[in-house]
Amino acid sequence: MFYDLNVPWAPTSPDLSRTVAFLSELGYDVIALSHIHSGKFPQSQLNPIPENPFPKHPNLRILRRITVILDDPSQNHRLAALTSAYDIVALRPANEKLLLQACKELDCDLISVDLSQRMGYHFKHKTVGLAIQRGVFLEINYSASINDITARRNLIGNAAALIRATRGRGIVISSEARKALGVRGPFDVINLATLWGLSQDKGREAVDGLPRLVVAQAKLKRNSFRGVIGVVVNEPLQGNKRKAEDEAGPSDQLKSEASLEDNKKAGAPPKLSKRARKALARASKS
View 1 (cartoon, one colour):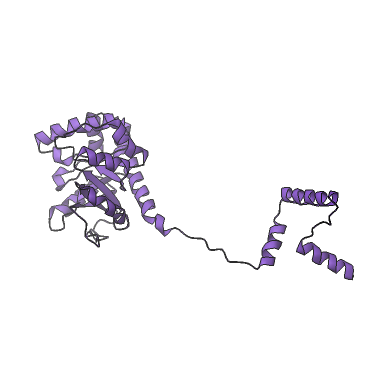
View 2: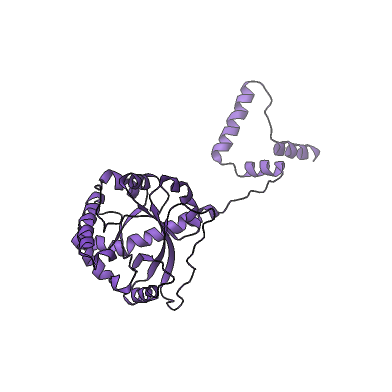
């Protein structure tokens, strides 16, 4: 299965439906429509993307994603609430300090840096390694570099630097295509990844295995608060004691026998359980 986890959501644009149709024709099985958010969050965060916006493509699984432009640390406390509203939560840090914070501790599924722009810092293995250790993946988007020479130059250099910093691990490749002309087929993307320094196998993982893992982990995180809580019904005290005695293993029986022997040596009468006393009473009556 092939994935494109970043297709910008533009409901008023006719290009969106064409892009989705073209992705399906190229062989993609799962795509994520991305709502881009910048600034502070409202008190009630609503997902503007409907659950099934393109029913004409039944074989295409469509996920809903939010990409948060992270340029203010005050946004961080609302990120956890987004998990229940979207299938995928991605962050786009605006500077190195926010990138470090996103890699180290922020609640998200993807970190998507705009690599088509000139970076004001260098990627460090120590920084991006924090994200990989937490199971957070780093995303490379290729569409902006298709028709822009400067963006292409920046993307090649920045993607190569990111791949070196991550040692080729934890990389997911998406299109971020706003038009159908900005999309490439899965195998073209794999070949493109080799120009950045990924092997063919790693390139395949970037559009197949790792995006699948992103989706699975995000679903697990989203449903974790709905976990089943086991309720134990209180039994009568006598029933609990009887059940405990019935389920006592050999080691428990040996401990009981040892306790009786100690009582005998001390000259004290042995302590009998309630069950044993009842059995003794029945035996004396008969």
